[in-house]
Length: 316
Length: 303
Image (cartoon, chains in turn yellow, orange):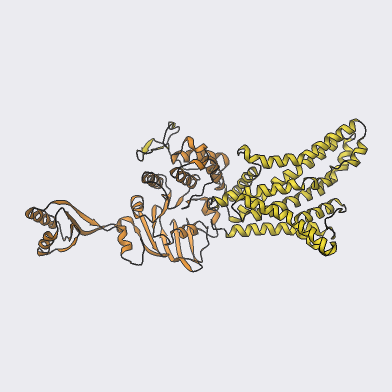
């Protein structure tokens, strides 16, 4: 630690002063007072959201930090790309009608295809957004900026939701663009697919808020990333197991209310509600479908509430 | 304009009163906040930052209420906590620039200031390397840099020399002294080490068990006492007897004689007596009160 390689003073107002002991010298190139704008809380909040969003994908970090988030995003997008390739090929061969009916990859089925990837993303990256600041006590530096504690928690929610929306919507956008481009009658295809954007958007928002919010709420209690990730995965996979076991014992009708407490159950029900489908398979999701998005909104709100409460109480 | 105004400030934690009815007005300058560990120094700083809410009373910084206008106060204040608070896997440049933005600086300005401030605290090429590989001294410099990067009007430093070796300590104190005197930034420096406070500060606030012990310019704490210390190589008993006989108030302290002098003629008397007795004289100096006396007066106060 020394002034080795210190450049010469570049601008006026600074004189070179060597001070300190023989062990290391401080070469002062002139501290200057700052006269520019101070943008305050809104700017601070937006900066924190941008920074945290980049963190969620490991942007500006080492390659290792990118492997999991970018890898999951690629995995979540691959089925859409493959399906588009098949559709394009089929339409060249003049068989798009058959393929379209048989194609398992479309707007309403896509959530169930990538559900695992989306849940894993929340489990891996929610602790990434919070754990470092908890573990190394960086919060003392955050909470003494032009921010409030609530702002910190809500900025993390915003960043997490945005990151998850990218993950969920990128393949949906590909499906949309692909379906329109391979269609022989593009204006008609736009007219046909545009109404689908509403349920696609609603489902994506609910998924992002529910899994992102729940992940952050759980992660806020553990500075250790591995514990937090394990706890979030447990919160996503244990409830369906409990529901399945209870169904065996008590029968589907008794167990149905439990599905409103299970994040995967909520999302299966909400997907069916938004796309006007019927639920099939062994899920015990048998209540009136409107209850599932409502349960999802309630659970998201509770999670975010817990997160804010937690950050109000933390001693930095 | 008063820099900091405390009015009956009280902070109670379950089972302990950290700040007890503290009222105080501080002007800009380098203020030493001194007290034993647990005296309430850190709590006071955290209340000023809005990090912990006070139980009762009020605190204002630059006429801004720390509770109601906390974000505005914090945008104008730099804080160095007593514990290390830096993530190991990012570089000094990254974390300081990020924190500068969170203090309200536009992005480009945040980057430019980061480079300048890191240079100011003495970090050069190493600022691009992850903080995990830094020495304690370098980490403390980064901590000071993040507190300075948004050019605050007030710096709150909580034990900034924690964990530093003697030369690192000297450099840190010198940096703080120059920051406080040359750049128009007021400083509150909390420390349990009186020597540090004496070297850097020009005003001193002593607190103990959350109560104000004294707040005054540093000089008044260490003013001359009218007592002269005569340190000898030999036994001071004879000299003490002769001085007493000459009508002075005298006390023996080890190899020294402490005498209360009424006027300058006392110096001549001492010189003549030492010569007459053939004693080896080590030094004669006016005795100053030390900051330690402040706490020694009150046996309840630690130190």
